[in-house]
Length: 349
Image 1 (cartoon, helix red, strand yellow):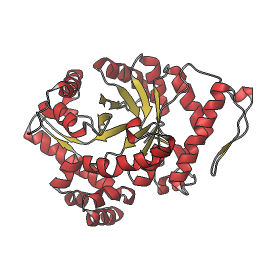
Image 2 (cartoon, rainbow, N blue to C red; image 1 turned 30 degrees about the vertical axis):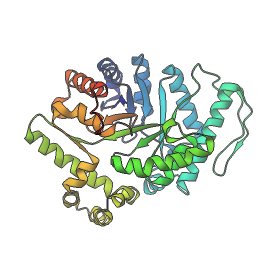
Image 3 (tube, rainbow, N blue to C red; image 1 turned 180 degrees about the horizontal axis):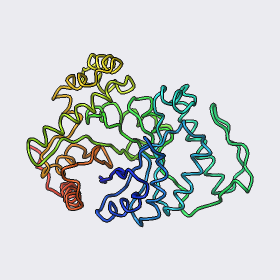
């Protein structure tokens, strides 16, 4: 299992130095987030400032860009990073796609499947000078000339990850992707019983299983060096879980845990702007299904124990403000990796 991180830099001028620091500490990958800024700019700066750490988007909004524009920026980043780029794609939700990006959101799962197939056809043309002949239900690639073809690169196989929560999007990952971005609102039970079987179902027609895809998860943690620090973090995590869980798209996980009513109540409070009251609906039991709760000196082992056998790579959802130093991160990564080598209890006779 790999231990990744997210970009924290608030200024692009800091992105290269931050990336070099994460690489020196020993993280396996840096993921750029599409929120207030374009995710590709800090990754471009990071590619120029690093040598070995992987770089990826978690996520880039697919429907905000045409397949060709996405293919082009991914191709350039793969070339610049010498094969270290991972393209994580997500659909976002209907309101943002239609009202913020002014783009179409009809049939998102089928549309994303077609989008990724079109991406691959474009990359095939770039690498092999193949005549464009892709025509799908939503996208097409039928025209190019030498001026617009960047040509082949040394590492043309760019891993594509799909982000999702519900079974239909999990099947999309199985059908056309190389990895799956697990939403922070998850539990190990939901992943084992819902997500992995759905990926398997999608992958089966192409002769693959969920084990052939890499599952990456952002993990909520509640930790600290003192009880007061843990209590403060617990309430912050509770509020963030409530915020995510108020979105109907993420309700499937609540339903899995028998919390359907909580999801409906959260949505109602969110519409009314009662954000402070929302957190009170997230019980301790539900919080501990979603978040890893452990003292700071036990966090590495607790993360491994929770995620082993389900996730292939993880990163923490939040920066640990009270322990955000290079020495702390090195210790956490060391403890996490040491847990993999620890002897397992013998099965009971």
